[in-house]
Length: 312
Image 1 (cartoon, rainbow, N blue to C red):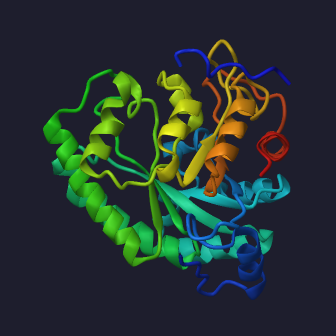
Image 2 (image 1 turned 60 degrees about the horizontal axis):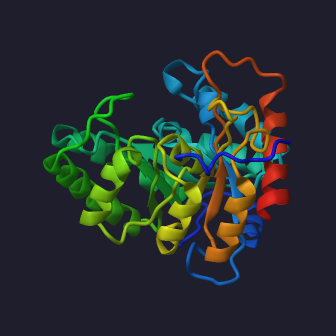
């Protein structure tokens, strides 16, 4: 393992409808109360399936769900954060409940995204949320990681005040929808929210100051933000984490812990701020990357690293 030294660069409801009592009991034992409601809450360590989606047509993980659940159970994870597209099919609840039962692996939440800055897209994005959130609640999920969308991927273009107003207006509606179903929303960042001195994220927080946050620590690094400083500044609002690693040359490592990010400093900061949310491993690989091992092994190594270094 390398010495992890990248961050100093510029750098509640739980409910299973039709689920088994065994899963419910196990999930309750693992998670305790919802984020922020109990000083004794154990940090739940899950994983997000983006690394699988990246190899699927249209990034649709539905056909890969049996493999995803099997691999994440093998890796010893506490739960799975789904991509919201997996909840769109009519049979999604029955399909996912069967996999939860088979692998004794609960759904802890889902990621969700849309062009929220574009008022012309509001009706479609809200309709998607109104489809997804009730299904997520029925599966026992309790978190929704929200990405607000970029004007153009790879662009440094800043959103205007009007676009940030539109973004906040739609977020308010999605937050209210989540509240009706016992789901805890959090703002999930890529680079575009935190580049340019965090213009996008600060614009949202200026309009919705009470928003809860689910930072992706690696995207913070790639956006030029020190994750330790971010964790300290926004400690009271952080309820969720995405964990990934990268090498000194900026390329993603195969597993968490094989890169050069300073996770020892991150772990110390998380202890200092008393983090009690969920921590989700989200592996990603460059397009030209050739894996040296099955994904399940990289997930298992990543889970071990979180236990040994972060203490979760």
